[in-house]
Length: 242
Image (cartoon, rainbow, N blue to C red; front, side, top):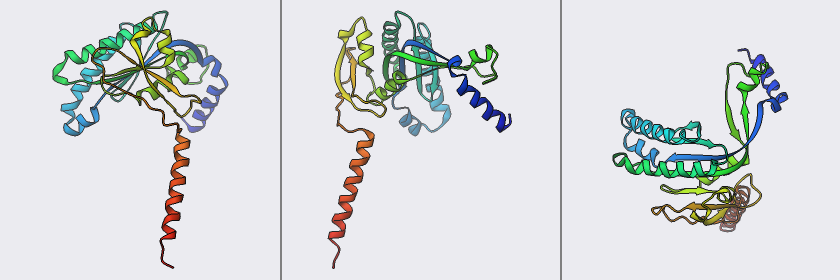
């Protein structure tokens, strides 16, 4: 396809965005295989680490697809969504089944990090646009969730550790068993004006996590770093001999 044609189609997507986008209230889940980078370092031969990864992805996929949908695979991470009135409950049950799956395959020593969120997301479906007669993206079909809920869930993963299941306040509020979700702190994140509250699922074997808000956004950290560097430069100049 010529570059000019690609540019034309890209502009068409922007014009036809409303026909490509729909909104749904979903439970969003990220499941990450913890320690996989270290495992690859210790077992650099692809024949050693690839079967292990395939076994993990297959097991997680089967569990999720019994009540939800796998959206995509990102290396050793799985992104999934759950729909309907029981979306949150389905996500909770899937998370616990994933933990059980990891425990049952003892020889692989699977350890996972799981984060979940709930709310309205925007779905982009280029296959739908094509079926309606537009030529915005011929041959491509995708229904991918986007929005603050997805972004927040991804940020929660950054607070997670192996063996833990975390969620947002929105997910906990929608849970039928919200008493099992214990508050462990809050943090500030790029793209969110308010601190993100974090809750951890009680499983009986969950690790202890404390999320602390340092009060600094990424922009604030950069400003503070610039200030410290300026102070260091000034101190060095004062120590120079006259």
